Amino acid sequence: MTPIPQDPAYSRLKSQLIEQTGLAFYADRDEALAGTIGERLLILGLHDCSSYIEFLTAESGTAEMEILIAKLTIGETYFFRDERQFTAIRDHILPEILKRNHSSKHLRIWSAGCATGAEPYSLAILLMRELADQISGWRVEIHATDLNRNYLAQAAMGKFRAWALRSTSDEVKGECFFHEGLVWTIDPRFKQWISFRHMNLVESEFITPFPSGTHFDLILCRNVMIYFTQEVSRRLVDQFHGSLCDGGWLVVGASEYSLVNEKDFSVVDASGAKVYRKVPPLLEISGEILQIKGKAPRPATTFPPHDVPPANSPPARDCGNLDALRQLADRGDWQNAAECSLRLLTRDRLNPEIHFYRGLILENLGNAGESERSLRQAIYLDRNFGLAHYHLALALKRDGRIEAAGRSFGNVLKIMAATPDLASVMAAPGVTAIELKELAKMHLKETRES
Ligand SMILES: C[S@@+](CC[C@H](N)C(=O)[O-])C[C@H]1O[C@@H](n2cnc3c(N)ncnc32)[C@H](O)[C@@H]1O
Image (cartoon, rainbow, N blue to C red; front, side, top):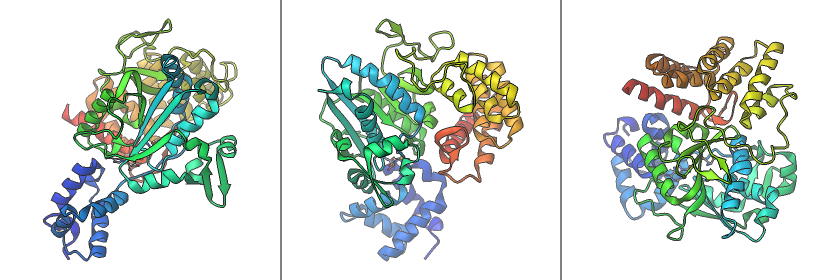
């Protein structure tokens, strides 16, 4: 048998698979893709890619396509992935929706690309544990969709390994799961609002499996588009825009922000996470002005403070360590965060993470020069600090220093090359190495094209 990548029909098969699934991720991963195809040919007793294409396109090919999808999709997920985003959902997004839908008492959420279900279940846990009083008597719908039917079947069972609960507190584990041996089973009461359905997000018609006219208050599509081309992702974001009600919210993965066309959404920095809202610019809500990126002086992306500051946020004087600094930054308390970073630096001036956070904080305070200096300091102290290189590259790109930005994005790729794809990135909870690499690659391409 000809080695798969040299098979004359391989590139046609690859293009078809990418087109059907959106998984452009495989465009430059021939080893992985050819390995999977080779395995299937062997099992099916087929000799080349052309006969495999024929098999896939025949009537009987549907089941084989499902098997292939199960092998090609990457379902990395865990409960409360990206704490900042869940804090933003709890402290800003849900309270806003509950206020807005007060009279209809109807809440509609869509978790698009839900994998084995940790994301929709995290939302159900959050709603039931923390907002139970406010949603009593409400109709709550959490629609969870995915391309991989195996993941959906697992999700419906609600059984998880400890690894999926690595960011879940012992208190939540104890209250919301039954634990037996290696398996954690979600308490069935967290299933009542969730419906799991199959859906391919890149099908051109984008026929939603929801009743016609359904408009969502909140759509989460996190760590899914990172595997697609920019073109497909942008089209998808447009479609999400159309599926949101006015004032509805879109949450994408932290490494997917650049895929959202900010002209169509209001960009809100809530609890250190960037979230998107379908509202006209400078919408006034309950007498508070949401400051829209690019429309107001910096700090332009700060969400108005929530009525009650999160209980676990330290006041400025309580700034003992990096965690306290992170919490201040998460809560968007940039001024106190800046003071806190200085205080920490007087005690630990060689700590690259403090310099890195100071860089992000100063950027949010509009001090681009000092921000860049801090990021460079972080890199000086740890040359392998991929995320610091990445943020420096973004700052250079924003400033129009395209060549230097390109070099810095290149550095990210060099540094991250040896890091396993699913490893977490230093200083970026919830972000995996593959996500950072893909993002750096995308920006690098943009800098080369500009
Ligand atoms: C990395 S997981 C993300 C899971 C979850 N959103 C999270 O952030 O933890 C990506 C998911 O996207 C799904 N996916 C990939 N291509 C898809 C497509 N064309 N339509 C729907 N889902 C897709 C995969 O099956 C996988 O479950």
